Length: 142
Image (cartoon, rainbow, N blue to C red; front, side):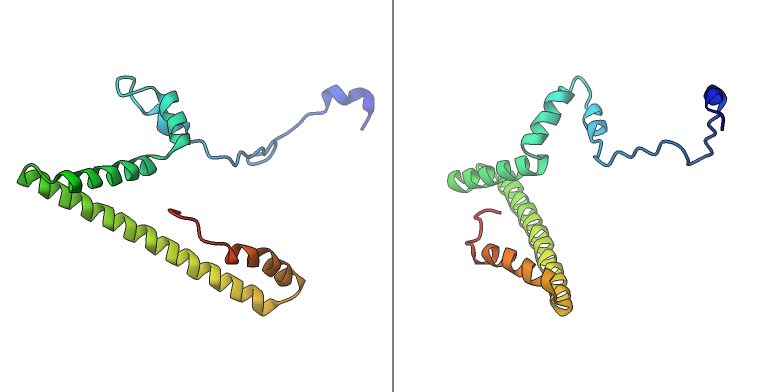
């Protein structure tokens, strides 16, 4: 190639070639942009979601509501029925969480056993890092 003809050198990009910059961070703005202006401010909703997810917020509200309802009693049979339904929903959600945590523990144990069978210095280093975590008291409310 002649350096004085650099301005003529064509660049041809076939499909799926060229600049392949890839964004790996998830774009969640679409969710908050779907909030109609009458329902709320999308920027505020997104920032609030960063503080606590909707599930976390609803979980806290549910705990307080059930405690208050049990302390004060139900005013009507319909309220008692609604409270029973809310308690059933809360129990079902807790069962789902418990099942997911149990499955994560089973998967983790299987991975550790696989690493142990392979042995080597990587397993010894991992053991040294994990042993203090396993001996620490569990977090409350995790």
